[in-house]
Image 1: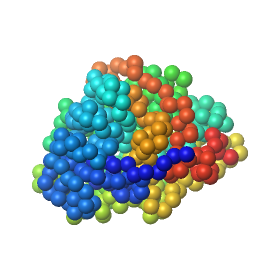
Image 2 (image 1 turned 180 degrees about the horizontal axis):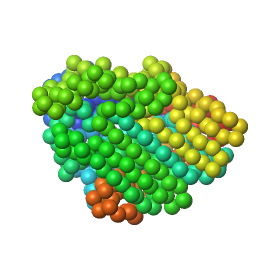
Image 3 (image 1 turned 135 degrees about the vertical axis):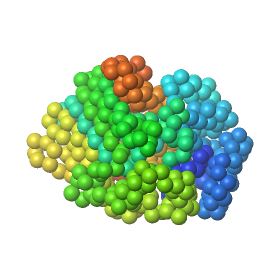
Image 4 (image 1 turned 180 degrees about the vertical axis):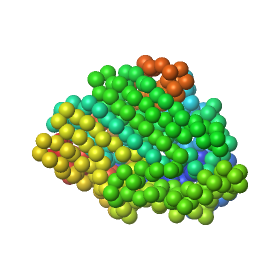
Length: 431
């Protein structure tokens, strides 16, 4: 029998990504938000005022807090490895944002540190955690539709138009669409395809003069089991992925009029990106408005899912297809088509909470870690291969791939064991 005690957690880096994640922190009764750390004094002030939690200026001072057991790391990408290693060496469990690191050497150092210190390391914040993709995985594992053969994933977003600070526009610091958004799609197709990508052929597009970073990528993956996957993300904000479904909308972070205003301001050089960025940080003028529109809280209010990141997916098996619906997934087979509803309980932030549940279960209840450092490193390898393939024009063979942990189908969902969760994830079949 498990013991439902509170886990003391902190956030390192309370930027835009951290602000999105804090909604899930608030909703989990098994977590106690002890502290946060950020270099921005205004951010620290607003964080403390909202959560009545401690605020620190650095990873060093945060790690001195003995009440903190685990840290969510959402600092700039170039610090992910450094901060994760420091935290683990000072007795803290870690969930690290995507991308896990900037290169495979850093990722390996993080894995080695976790093994040496005995601390838990989770490669977090990808959409592979959420119920629709986990249910797809269970159906594939059941064999009821035969083997998985193809996974197609298309995202059309306004990601490139969102406000950026200098480090986000520097490829050497992990900037650009591939590193910052690619892991959402790659982690998911790796889960559904069995994890073991054999090779990658990729193309990266950098064609917006106002943005010195890629805003487009496409890639073809071949898996060792013979499955293939095609992923595409166009982040220029013209056609929006929400229009791919009948219940969708022509907006994401911005609506069409706002996208026009932002784009033209960038072209003219009149946009104040620092001000725009501050407006969507914690306590900013547009924080709640933007994140509710973008879909962070759609699942809480019961609004339908619409394709954004990572996009619209079609999984093709030998005897059927699987797609997403407004509230779950649709299975298309020899008996027609039928929907499996996966609407979460009230107050459950579906797109953010599952990795926190995985951390809690691992630390408090001794459950397995599914999104291990090795799993994160395999996703990073495939992410880096897209850019390398685009530069060289060559097919890139992968060497660090790992399969999903065998009992991933038994992982808890909605905070309760699968055996008590009805027909959400409790059986490998969908009938």
